[in-house]
Each structure stands twice: as structure tokens, then as C-alpha cells.
Image (cartoon, rainbow, N blue to C red; front, side):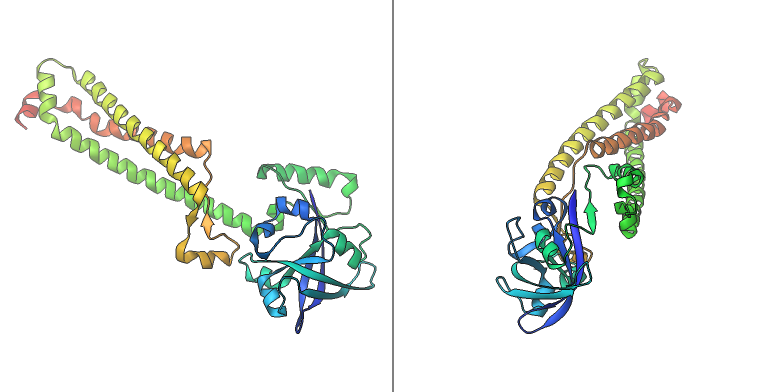
Length: 313
């Protein structure tokens, strides 16, 4: 759990002033829940020992003409309605990639925020993080039912950012559609390959059938052959896929020319895929089932072959 307090101030640099959203944070906990500490491009992030210190977005720092070590004067309204005024030394400048955020946000240590805005130990937000997204809704329900949180607004990440939830659902649906299209393409390729294999080996089948091999046994032989080929292909594919995914997870996948566009939505310049047991099993298993089913189509043509006609082909 992390605590945050928020206020709006008139911030002044050496020559210019502008309105900023100031957030009081617990530096120790913020590192665990926020990406801002990793987005510092100049200086450092806040520490628990800092007094009147602040980190500020790149665009806000540029507008106020502030650099590391410069002082920013803040004027706002305290919790009790009094005038809140303070001075903070800039110790770090961050760049999130979201212009609106970098232009309007500054962070202070929670203790310093408390002193400037007369919070008397109060905070505006309590932020809970979980190992699994599915744990957030049950936890929110428990908090709503707790008498200690009576009168407080409890929101899950889905309620706080509905647009993000819709984007994830849209991406999931589009991914399923693309997966289905790939499976269909693979199925047609497999059917075509097995049809060619059977028609090119009609003479071989004719010889085997003429010396007494029953069509049913020949069908089983071809199915075992397709099973072996599929298994070898899947094993090689899974090994290569795991190796390439682990490599991409370590070094990332560069977005190239799209990086600047994606940065406007808070997305990183490099994407780091995550390897899960589900992703390893589902794809190969689906391809395996489709391969066996589609292989049946050309293989079942074997019993209709006539040995004499097959030998003449």
C-alpha cells in the first residue's frame, strides 16, 4: 500500500510561473508501484531522507527554466483553507513520454507535502497493488464492506481507467482473431502438403496394396507418419519460440519509427514479452489438433485407391 496526497499550486522558477499538480509521495513505496522513479532522465529520484526536495516533468522544468539544484517556489491552499507556501529544491527531472503528465506534474516527499499543505497526517489516496489483476476486485469489495472505509470512494483499476480496460479487451479480441486466421492458414497449408504427398506416392501405395497391405493399415501408417512429422515440427518450433521469446524478454523489441507515437500514450520504446506456460502449451496444442484433423482429409482418400490404377500413375 502506498499513500499519496495531491494539490494544485502556482509554481515559480527563476523567471516564469505556471500551474502544477503537486503530488506528495512516499519515496520508498512509490518505487514499487510507480514508473516515475525509472523515468528519471536527469538527477535522481526522491529518498525518504529528503526534506524540501522535488522531482518534476521535463516540459514543466523547461517552461519554468529549472535545473538540478534550482529552487521552485509553490503557492497554493492548505487543507484548513490557509495559504500554503513552500520552496523545494529540484533533485530530479523525469520523462514519462506523456506530454500532459510531463508538463503538469511535480512530486514531493509526503512529509514535506504534509508540512506545506497542513495535512495533519491525512492523505488523499491509498493505493493498493496486487500480484494478480484478478485480486483487485475482491479486495475492493472487502474494503467497501469495511466500516473503517465508510465514506471513502474505493475504485479498482478498471473503474479508475475504463479506457485502458477497453483497450486491453480490444487487443485481446484482435489477438484471438489473428490467432484464428493463422490457424486457418496453417490448416490449409497442411492439407495441401498431405494431398501432394499422397498423390505423388500413389505408385508406392499401389505396390504396397498389391503385395497384400490392407488399406486400413496403410491409413494408420500415414497417420503415424503425419503424427511424427508434426511432433518433430512442434518440438523444434517450441524450442525456437522459447529461445527467441527469452531473448526478446531480456533485450526488448524496438518499436522503431512507432516509438515516438507510442510514447504519447505512455508506452515504452521497447516491448518486453512475457513467457508463460499458457502461451507455450495452447498454441502448439491447437496446431497439433488441427494438423491431425486436417491430415485425415487426404489420408482417407487412400482406401479409394485401386492398386492397378495406382501402379500405372
